Length: 61
Image (cartoon, rainbow, N blue to C red; front, side):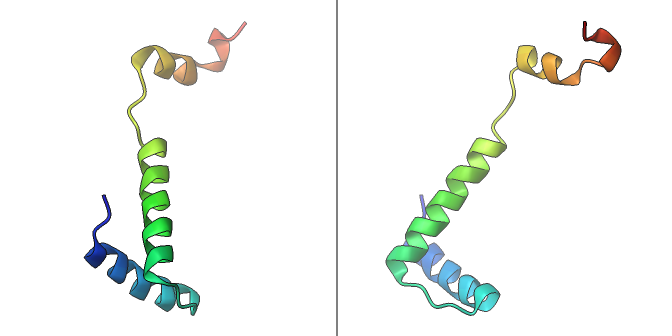
């Protein structure tokens, strides 16, 4: 959950990086979607799924 303080900090960082000012509402939306994307990308992988990704080329038939 993004707090108002987090969103205001994000506004400042966003402006420093892009040179664009965004509203507090936009800061909430962008920050929240960024956090969700990171959660999705870094979610734990189940062992059975991991095994499929780490097999060597010689294991593939």
